[in-house]
Length: 227
Image (cartoon, rainbow, N blue to C red; front, side):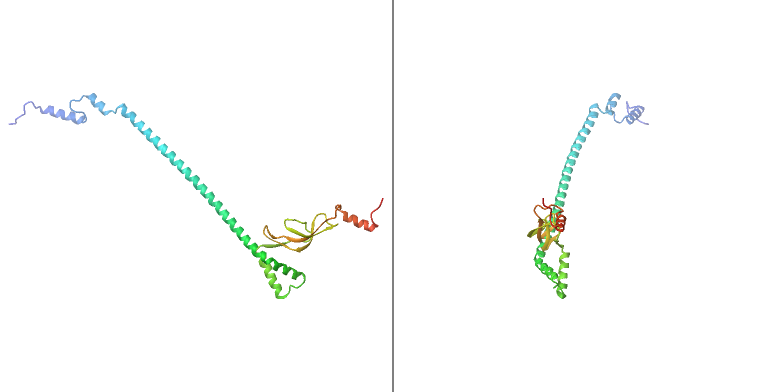
């Protein structure tokens, strides 16, 4: 014989169990309205979330601006350093070329008297035999080093490259002209290491261009007409 507990109904227990399974979050004694309120978030929580995201985005934007500013500054520093380095390289290369030219000019200047002796020996027909071979080798060597000789008879006088040692007047020139080269000049590139020493002639005072032909005609006719 089964003994039943007074006041306990098995059917009522089963019904309560089913209700609890269907609504597990609803506490005992709570109404259905309370359950709906618990399931839906409040308006204050919904507004707080977007506000927090906006503040986070603002902070990230500020950090990004700082990074961009720093990047621009580092880029400008790098460009400035690169420009300074290029200027330094050009300056070093220019100084190197200048030092080389000065050293070469100093050496060749010491050889100019020897080249003058060779030139005079050639003019007098004394450049023969082994001396001729040595002289030509020396002239070839200094030419390879960039030494150039200049100064010719009949060219206009240029005070920047000529040094006038003698002066005269001539009826057959229309401007100051080199009529004799007493000592040739030498240059290396655009650098003159010795000017050409020359004798110059200027037009006769009062002479006009073409007066040479007139003088020849006067001589043939016995002189200029008088009166």
